[in-house]
Structure formats: C-alpha cells, structure tokens
Image 1 (spheres, rainbow over the protein chains, first blue to last red):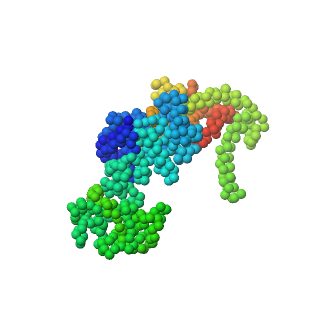
Image 2: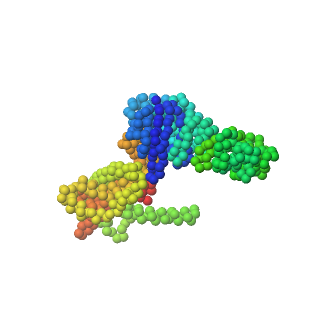
Image 3: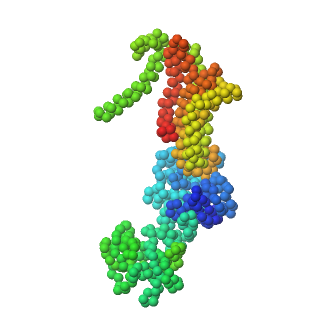
Length: 362
Length: 270
C-alpha cells in the first residue's frame, strides 16, 4: 500500500513561510507531479515527506499512520535527488547495494538484487565503475537503481531530469513512467517543467508561494485551470492574457471589451451577471488564429504581425494588438512581419478570470 | 627559449637554493668529522666521512629517543585532533551552517601565543602530576592543533554536498554509518592533508615542550639545544640527528604531497 496524505502542513524557513497550510493526497500506485515555479515550496514539500525537514504544523500520514516523528531512514521512502547524490568513492555496484547493506542483507542476496536491478535499467556494464567515470544519463539511472532496489512504499523524485540534455530527458521521462507503471509504486515527482508534468503525471498538483493552487489530471489542469497562475504556468507558449471589462455591445450582446472598440466573446451564459466587472481574459495560442481579411465588423481585435517563428511542426506568430499576443499557426502559414488583420479566438476556449483574485470565473 | 621562461627558471632556482642549501649543509655536516665542522672556508664536499656523528647524536646524546618521542607525540596528537576536529567540523558544517563567527572564534584560539599559557599549564601540570609526561604534552598540543583541525575539517566538509548525507539517511544509514561510509571516504584527501599539517605543527612545537618536559619526555625541539655546549656546538651530531629525523617526514610529505597541497588550498588555510 502507498497512500500519502499531507494535512494542513506548514513550514517556515528563517522568516519565510515556505509551506502554508498545505493539503495534498497521493493515492496508492499514483504518479503525482508537484509542479511550480522556482521557490514555490515543491522541494521543501518533498523533503518534508522524506523526513529530511520537520514540519512546523500539520501531519503527514503514510497508509493512515502519522510519520511526523519518524526519521527519514524509517519512513520506507526512496529518493532521487536533483544531482543524483551518488556516493563518489563507492563503485556503482556498492552504490546500488548500499541501502541493502545498511539493513544487513546478506552479501550474496545484495549481489543478486544489484544484478537484477542493473539489468532492468540496462547498466550491467557500469557496475565496476566509479561515479566519476559516468555520464549524466548513466548517473541518473544509477540513482534510480539505488531507489528501486529498496522496493519502497514511495518514490520521491526531486527534478531528476533537470540536469539532462533535451534528448536524454525525453528518453528518461519515458523510462521512468514505464518503470513506475510496471512496479506500481506511489511516486511523488517534483518539477518546474510543465511539459514533463503533463507527459508523466496521473495527476498534477500546481503550487505557488507555498500553497497548492490546483490538483487535477493533466488535461483538466490544461483545459480548465483554476486560476490565472495555473493557466499561465502550464502550456508552452503560455496562455495569452488581456485585461477586459464585461460590457454590453451595441447589438445587445454581452462581451469582454479588451480594447478601444475591440471585443472578444467568451461562450458563457454567466457573463450576463458580470456586466461592468473588470476581469482578465485568457486564451491559448493554439486556440488563436489570425485573419488577414477580416469581415466588416468594427469590433474585431485588430493586430499586426510582430514576429514569425517557424518551429518545425508549427509556426509561432506574435501579434501586436492591445498587447503582444501569441498564436500557434500551421507550419505552412504565409505571414510576414507587418501584415495586418484581426485576431480570432475559439469562443468555447476563452477563459475568464477575476482580476483581483485570479480565480477562473468562466 | 623565451626571456620570460628563462626568468622563471632563474627565480625558481634562487628559491630552490634558499630551501635546498640548508638541507645540503645538514647532510654533509652529518658525515663530516669534527675537524671539518669549523673549517674555513667550509668544504662543499667533505674530504673524509664518518659515522661517529650518528652514533654520538642518536645513541649517546639521546637523539634516537628524541625522534621516537616526537614521533609518538605528534602522531598521537594529530590523530586525536583529527578525530575530534572531524566530529566538531561535521557538526558545524551540517547543523550550524551559518556559523562563520563561531568557526572563526574556534580558530582564533590558535592565534594565542603558546608562551601565554605555558606557565599556567606548568603550574597545573605540576599539581595534577602530568608534568614531564607523554599524556600531558599530547593534551597540551591540542590547544593549538584542535582549533585548526575543527576549522579545516569544517571547510572541507562544506565542500561535500549535503545531499550525499541526506541520500544515505534516506537509504537507511544512521548518522555514524553516514560518516563512516560516505562522508569520511569522500573527505579523505582533506583529512589526510589536515593530518599532515597537524603533525608538522606538533612536531615543531618548542615553547610548550620546553616548559612541560624535562627528563622523561624529550621531544626533538627541546633536545637539540642540548647539543650546544659551553665551549662548542656539536654540529655534526645535531646534523646527524636532524637528518635521521627528517627522512620519514620527507618520505611522507612526498608521498602525500597532493593531499597536502589540497589541504592548504582547499581548506581554510590559504
């Protein structure tokens, strides 16, 4: 079993409240990703779960049992650190076997299990080497092997892919996801890379300033972000945001006024109750298009092409309008800098956020 | 060859001469018969050689005992200083990471001149029967070696990522096991280099040895002045003793020079 619960956990480091009344759950066998910008408290959360930091308030429960007072070595967790923390003076086989050695497992059994885990991660040829002789990717697999050999209740991973190049990162992502699925161990994975989170997670917990903003599936986080922070953090290129006021147009329709005479019309019945309210409109670049020959309507959000960036499979076009807006257009888009036209956004993909709290209204 | 390179070679040769010349003089003097000790001008290569200086210096004047006493005192003191220095340095590094002021306060004890507490120690040792004892000298040498050991070990351990300790803890190791299996092996070059420095300081200590020993314990720094008589100085004998005493030290320093350089440049003594 591997159920993890954090109940009203708070932690202060120095004069900074790093974790503020945090509530989080990870179910048995789940791959939970904690995602957030640098300094949001995600690593501190992981360290509190591991027992490397004591919580100031709240409880941490593993399979229903409070572990606040248990030391790291007694929590049955395995951790992969950002810089792998492989013991530099031990050979790889001794590194991997170390967790079993400290538990006085017989040497023959240690050797057998080390070989088994090394075969699983395809590092059998590295066992007699020292860490200094390994590449970044190899060290990462050694760190994983050392975590796996323990057969722990929980895997804790603190940005283990951040030191790898882009290609290795993709490979490692797939490997970790596959392993976790095969072994069925509850995994808490910390990252600041939203693409990594989206690809690997069963659920994502987005954190900011020590507080969990939203916990949901990747698709829900992406499609229905709970607030502007989540919406802006997840997605690349990030969501476009415009300040707006909910206004009644000359034809009687309710829309969001984003410019002098420019309107966007989110699809929602709820807009009628918000007339006069200052809000923030958000829409994703892939839901945005550019019409060089717009209709005669005077309420279009007009724009001029600012930059064109062909990316291989699509084109990122930056449009200068009431502010700079990004659109993801097909690769064969034939636009040039300076072209004028109007921005069009899929109505059902426009999100409306409260201007003060940032919470999503629509 | 460029002028710059020639200049460097000349500078190195000059420095080498200043360091090597006394050593050369010591070696040749150790083998010179007495009649050549005060020869003017002194011969660069002795026309005759003798082993009488070694016999007299080591066996008659007690030079062999002096070497053994110094070896025992310096080795014991270094090991004790290293042991406690490592533990204290680890505590400062891992549990009081912002303890720069405390670390420096500890190091500042090293700055006190030995003569300042030689007399108090003399009076104390006379009353607790540690005067002229090996234990007494080993303990008193801790007053200057232990602060240095703590400072240097703290700085070496600061260079070792804390994640290594934490990884060992998560893997199930106790604090002692973490130290034994992870921290000490990783810090070993620094530990060895620090040990050599501590050994050298203890080996060369004169003032405290002079005040606190007389007959039973005869470390070399206090023994050598006894080679000066009222009418002459036993140059050959003292050179023979110094030569025998320096051989193991030179061998150890050559063998462990990398660690020594690392200790001097990686730790707190720059």
